[in-house]
Length: 226
Image 1 (cartoon, rainbow, N blue to C red):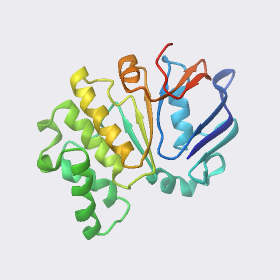
Image 2 (cartoon, rainbow, N blue to C red):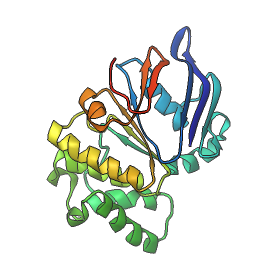
Image 3 (tube, rainbow, N blue to C red):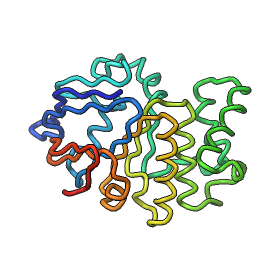
Image 4 (cartoon, rainbow, N blue to C red):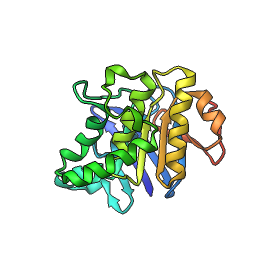
C-alpha cells in the first residue's frame, strides 16, 4: 500500500528533515507513526500527499508513483488518501451534512450520489442523528468525527490521521480512536501520526518510531518508548 525507499528531504541550505527513510505498509494495516516534534513525522505526511517532493528516494502508494506524479494528477491522488488533522477545518456556516457533502460537490459529483454517500459515512462515525446541526452546536469530539467523515467521503484506501486527538480530553479521544479502529476493520489502511504515548501503548498496534528524520524502530506490536 505504502512504500518509501531511501526517502530524503533536505531544506536549503542544510536542514535535513528526512535522512533516508525506508517503510512498507501493507494494505489494511493499522500503523502508528510516533516521535517528538522535529522527528520528521509531518514532513513524511507531506511527502505522502504530494504536498512536498522528496529530495531523493522513491514513494509509491497503491500503485501511484508519488515521487514523479504530475501536478495535474495530484488532486486525483488526494481523493484516494483521506487526511484528518488536529484542526477540524470545518465550514462554520454549513451543517454537518453540508460539510461532508461539500467535498463531493467540489469534485462535481452528481446530486444523487451525494445524497446516497453522505448518510453512509455519517453512520460510520455515528453522527447520522446530527446531520443538520452546525459545528458550533457540536462538541470537539463530534467535530472531529465530522472531519473523519469528510475524509472518508471518497472511500479512500488510505486514511492518514495526523494528531487527530491532540486537542481532545482522554475520554473524547477514546471515542475518536474507536471510530478509527472501526474504519480500519472495514478495510481501510490507517496511518496514525501521534506523540500520545497512552493511545499507542493501549492499542498495541504496529509502531514506527522516528527521531531526527530517521526510523529508529519498527515493531509489529510496539510501544511508545521515545
